[in-house]
Image 1 (tube, rainbow, N blue to C red):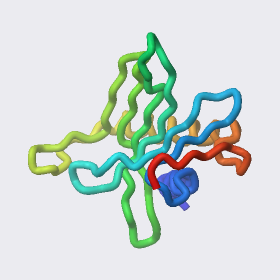
Image 2 (image 1 turned 90 degrees about the horizontal axis):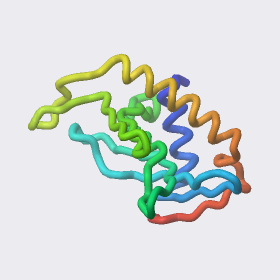
Image 3 (image 1 turned 60 degrees about the vertical axis):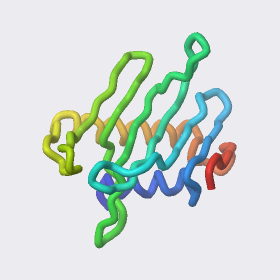
Image 4 (image 1 turned 90 degrees about the vertical axis):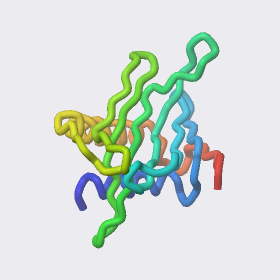
Length: 141
């Protein structure tokens, strides 16, 4: 199984059939996993996000969006955007034209987000977000 297929498996595990889930593990910021719509070229988008708070405002720390694609041999989830509100960072791997076609790709960011996703999901697993003891709240079935 390639890494993008492993990401899809992890996201499906965290969502467990729901559209939006908040997962809580004592000692860590809650994790929100939610389907947030479709990319401009029609692929499902899933956000993996932890929020902090600053001056009463929710701050994404971070928000990693995956583009989910159905393939003949399974489902793949490619990280395509990153946001961290504390640092004022918003990054997108792809750009689209007005008709929804991909026109540009940033290869270095694509690789960087792939590595970040791999490491962050491993950390979330170590912190207990994948464990049956994590508290799961379905926000949207």
